[in-house]
Length: 110
Image (cartoon, rainbow, N blue to C red; front, side, top):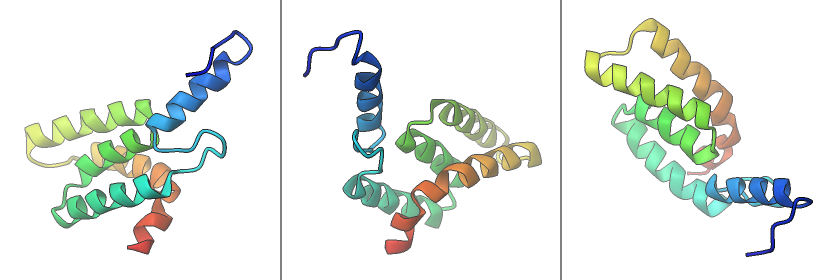
């Protein structure tokens, strides 16, 4: 691990966050191997109609903490009620609409 100084601290933090999100630190691109593995799980969940679960996993994979938290709250209410109401459905769709294009090319490859 490199020495972190005040000059490189911000870059180091971005680099570490990118690694956790399955991205390469230099190009800020998604790691293809990790993305393909993620898409395999994503497809299996879609086949089971686990769309709310996928919204959580998608936000988590891409490192979007706020979207991940929102998706977890939606999933919790979905499971408690046994259905997804219109408001939560719209919120979940907005999360997916924003994030899915970042990984769609890996979905299309399978």
